[in-house]
Structures are given as C-alpha cells and as structure tokens.
Figure 1 (spheres, rainbow, N blue to C red):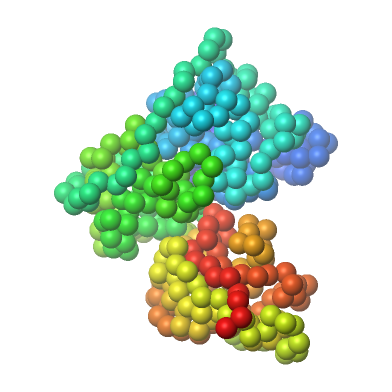
Figure 2: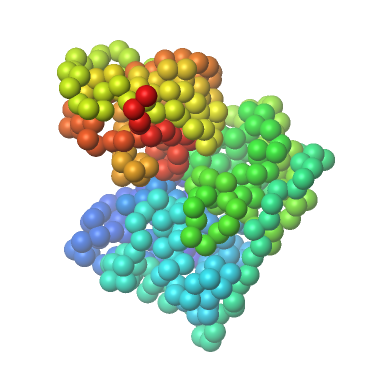
Length: 372
C-alpha cells in the first residue's frame, strides 16, 4: 500500500501521535533543524492547533484509498484551482488559513512559515499538470422533518464517514466525543451535521458554532442525513471509545483550595454562562483574588476533555485551565463548582470564563465578568 494511503487509513482508527523518527516538524518545533515532511504535515495535527489534521477533512483523491468519505473535497489539484471557498478567495494560503483558524484553532500561516512552505511543496508535488477544477458546494439547512431515516443504513454510512473523528459506531476519539447511545435529539443531530462551524466565520454563512466541520449538500444528501440522524439518536450505547469517559466531576479544585486575599477590583464580579452546547449554564462569581465559584451549574457531562478555562476578550484558545477534566456519566444539575487560577496567573489574565473542550478547542458555554 502506498505510504500516504497507509497513513490515511491509520488516522481513522488511531491517535495522531508520531514517533520521533517520523516527526514532521523537524525535531518537534519546526525550527528547521531537519527538513519538514509536507506529506506527514498533511496527515498529522499541527503543534499550534487542536487534534484535527488536513487529512481528517480532505483526502488526496476520491474515492479515498481508506474508503472514508470526508466533509471536504479532495486536494489533488488544489494548487491549480482558480478560486476557493465558492469563489470568495483566490489564494490557496487564504483558503488554508480559514481551515487553520476556524477548524483547527491555530493561527494563520504567513507566506514564509516553514510549515506552510512544506505543505505547499507537498501539494504541488501531487498536483497534475493543467488547471484545477473550480469547486462549488451548497451549505444546506437541516431537513424540516428529521424523522423517517433508516438506522441500519445510517450505521453503515456513519462508519464510512463520521468514523474518522467519532470512531466506529460513534464510540468517541481524542478528536470528537461519543455521540451514539445518548438520545441527543433528531433536530440537534441534523443541525450539527449541516451547520456546525464558527458562527463568525469569514467565508461561511449561517453556521451554528463548534469545531466540527459541516457537511454540505454535495457531500451528504438529505436522505443520508436522515439515516445518520436515525442511527445516532438511538439509545443503545456503543462499546469502547475514549471520548466520553467519566471525568473527576469535582470542578477541578473543590478539594485542596488555596487561601487568597480579596483585594483585586474584579472581586465580586459575576459572569452568566451562555449555553452553546451540552446544556451548559450557571453563574460564576469571583470570590477572591484566586477563586471563582460557579453556582447553579448545569452541564450534560459529555465531551472529550472538558475543563473550566479563563481567558481575555473571549479568546480561550490562548486561555488557561482552572480545573481538571469535569466530564462524568451523570449530568450536573444546578450544582456548585469552585475553581482556582493557577498560581502563575492573576485576575488580570481573565475577563471571562468558559466550559472548554480542550482537544477540539471548542467552547461549550461562556460568560464575561461584569459588576453585579
């Protein structure tokens, strides 16, 4: 089997960690001490983003050698395409940077960035001669009626598409949580399939939040969406998977708590958590110079590795954790969590709080601190 096809098959069922000898970043830091491997950069998560890699959403050819259908188009002739993102962009680096910033939670490439140069060289090396195909796709709203799908057909389709992030039968991976056997609701599932993605996307309209890529109408038909909905919405949980294990469920700090002064001007401010996903809610109060209490906390307990994060200006990608993993098998229903800032941080380092899915860099719910 060619090397690239083997790698694409492996990422569907394993983590994206590489050995030192296969390190695509030249010693792990991209400093040029070793040549960067553009092919591995295509299939490996990049060090400044989340767990997503280019190859999770794009194959080189279709049908793909690993048999998996992906939400994005193939990239064989990407360097030769006249436009990108439905004609909105004319430079490949700008299209890649949409993926970087909106899906991979990474900063945009500069033209001279060594990782970008290596990726571009790889994409150029696989491209055929001549102009590439100008692609168009339609972002579709979910079907108005989400009933009537075939769960058996949906399971087969799931394991030929969604498997790459959610694992076989939806058991969950380090990229995406377990989603089957939870009774998530047909309308919710259909909405996530069709319109997941950052609400403030620079190129896509009417997305509804999250890091999961949406499936456009030319990648999944409405009939296929209904089959997926019917399968995912079943109540029988799959075996295995590591996307929804029990977390400590203690708010990451209710045990050993430091004693801090209450001198900072932010003490007493509150933040009302606004739900984005997973039934997140509650009111956070800054108790003293290092302690935040969340009252009436609600959260369904699901995710990959979910922690309480602090950040500035709504930027939790650059934020910091104030808890351990708070996932658990039973929902939080009006409970109280108490968390503390790391000793290296002060209240000057945050103006908001988030229930943050760390591997995906996804915000499940957040609030900005304000005077009561």
